[in-house]
Image (cartoon, rainbow, N blue to C red; front, side, top):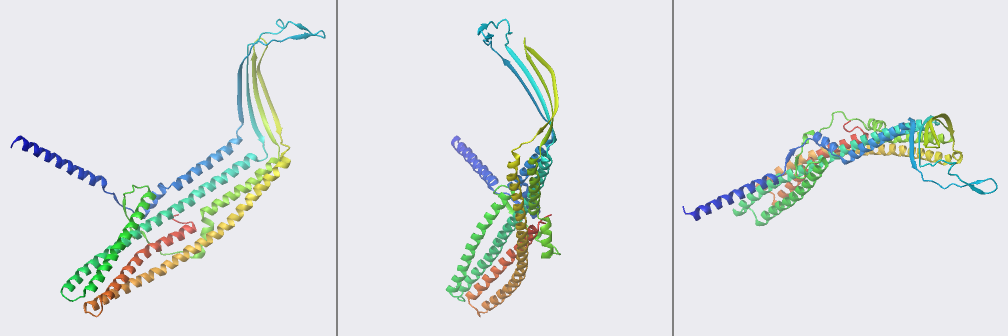
Length: 449
C-alpha cells in the first residue's frame, strides 16, 4: 500500500467516525423524553410548580408577619439617645448694671470646648382602650383568611391540572381513533384498487374512497397539532421540559359508586367552601375594625421611665438622673375625627356582608350548574355507547351489501364516517364525564379533600 492510499484510508476512517458520532449525539440529545404520567402524579407536580400557589404562600407569610407586628405593640418602647458636641469659644459680653459698660467675662466663665449627654427612655402601655387587643384580633382574622385563600387556590389548581390532563388524554384518544380509521381506509383503498383493476369497480368509486382517505389524513394532521399544543400546555403546567412526551392513563377516570345529591352538595359547599370561609374571616376582621375605631375616643395611659446623664467639663456633670412616672395621653381632635373612621369601618363591614350573600348565591348556582352538566354527560355517555353499537352494526351490514354489489361506494364511505365519529364521541365523552364530576367536587369545595 502506497503512502497516499494509506493516508486516504485514514482520512476516510476519521471522517466516518466523525459523522457516526455526530449522528449518535444528535439522536441522543435531540430526542424527547417519554414519561408515563398518572393523574395523581400530575396533580402533585401541578401543586408543586404552581406560581399561583407560591404567591398564596407568600401572602400567608405576610399575614403572619402582620400578626407578629400587631403583637409587638404590647412590648415596651425603648430608646437610647447620646451625643457628643464640640464647641468653639464664644465671645460673651455682659453689661454691668445701668451703665452699660462691658464686663470682662473671661474671668467669670470657663472655656467650654465639648459637651456630652445620654438619655434612655422606656414607655410601657398600661391602658390603650383596646387598640392593641383589637389590632391583634383583626390581624389574626386576616391571617386565617389568607390561609383559606391558599386552600381555595389549591382546589382551583387541582381542577386546572385535571382539566389539562383530560384534554391531553382526549387529544391523544382522537389521534388514536383517527389513525385506526386511516389504516382501515388505506386497506380498503388497496382492495378497491384491485377491484378496479379486475373491472369490478368503477374508477369514480375508487376515487371517492381515496378522497375520503385524504380527508382522514387532514383530520389526523389537525388532531396531531392539537395534541402537541395540549402536550406543551401540560409540560408548562407541571414544570417539565417542553419536549417531554406524556402518556396519560384513562383507567383513573373512575367515578365513585355513591354520588351525593344536589341538596347535600349545596349544604356541604355553604359550610366548606374555602373562599366563602375566607370572606367570613374578613367580615370578622371588619367587625373588629369597628371596635378599633371606637378606641380613639379613649385616652391612653403609659408608664414611663428614663435615665439621663450629661457632662460639660468645667461647668457641670449629671449622673444617675432616673425618672419614673405615669402619663395620660388624649387627642382632643379625636372627638370630631373619629366618627368618619367609624363610618368607614361600618361601611366596610356592610359591604362584606353583601359580598357574603352574593358569594352564597354564586356558590349555589355553581353547584347546580356543575351538577346538571354532570347529569347531562351521563346521558350523553349512554347515547354515545348506543351510537357506537349502531354504527358498528351499520358498517358491518353496509360492508356485506357492498361486497354483494347491493350498495355503492358512497354508502360504504358514509357508514365508515359515522363509525369514526361515534368512536371519537365515546372516547371524548368518557373523559368529559370524569371532568364534569371533578367540577362538581370543586364547586362544592371537596375536591381531593
